[in-house]
Length: 477
Image (cartoon, rainbow, N blue to C red):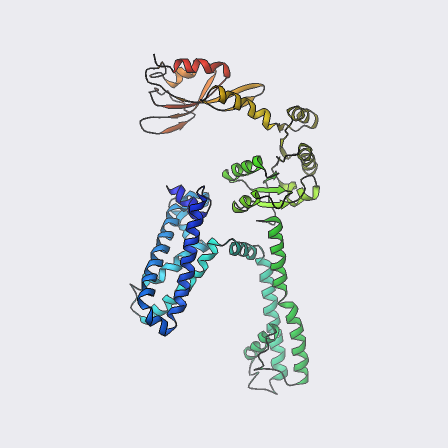
């Protein structure tokens, strides 16, 4: 249940309709709550709708509190907050969790604080509820990522702005102080003029009257146009990069470059993310709907031709751990692999090749050991699953086909009462997992001897020749 709650709240649930419904409901409550705060400041409306506003406040607080409690309870399902105590503390100190807390804290503090002025200030803190929308808005989350990625440039721009304000106000003070001792009484007084001039607002309440002051004011106004255009340029370029590359990083190391986001590529990506691996997806078609899934999972995307060296360079191929080429074009996959090997000689390469014969030639001719034909790999599994429903998978060890089978011990069969050690000693098989029917406890790669009982489940690996024998000893006498 905890995993389901976590997935629904984070919007990664398989029950996407439920996630979307809850998101829409909470966003509507946030918006209505902010409207209610505004209405409370209009005295005639506040008096007329006092009971309705109070009732809605209790309702919204209940919703926000339940949401916050569920988030804290289920956050341990995330690898980032997996520790049952310290993980929850880290989550509660995260920016969005603090916003959730500020949305409900003022309401509860009013029960323990008697000072009316302080209560009024606490109620004002309810405006922080508007920031809850950021959790459910992809656009605001994108803006937040852009601010975080460009924080150094924005800080430098702010510092330059402060330096310019200091120098311009200082010079203007010494130029205009004698002519206007009240307007430019001190450097802090002149700073107001500097801010108004640099931002090109120009209220007109304070302005220079001397010729040197006018010259300085005109110069500062011209500089201000360019100065305050810098943040717009920085953020604008970041938005362009976000559109092109998605969750873009300055650099990445020991990551996986996945070329081709099709039916196989999307499954490979999900498996890599399941193991908390950094992934960059390279996809030629920017309208590919699967790119949205990659975006939702926090995967960096590069739009371009996988055959081009420039495209692989954008995916930081020189620092990558592995290149996985799984597009529908065999030759494109091969060319991407060769370019990756050219960029980094020791990079591990996994290649999808539809033609089984071509896959074998690539392995021998180009030294790319991990070259697979999906059809050749899947064919034995399909055939054996059709013949025997207990076969749940297959794989090759060299040229030998191995089967994975799921077996339920039948009552009265020779296996009922046999130990796992005796069972494995019967031939070429290995027990991968055991599940006790009575307790539901599951054990992987068991080393101890366990007595098998009716209803117990086994997942085992064996050769095709052993399949008939296994079924024979699992038949009731």
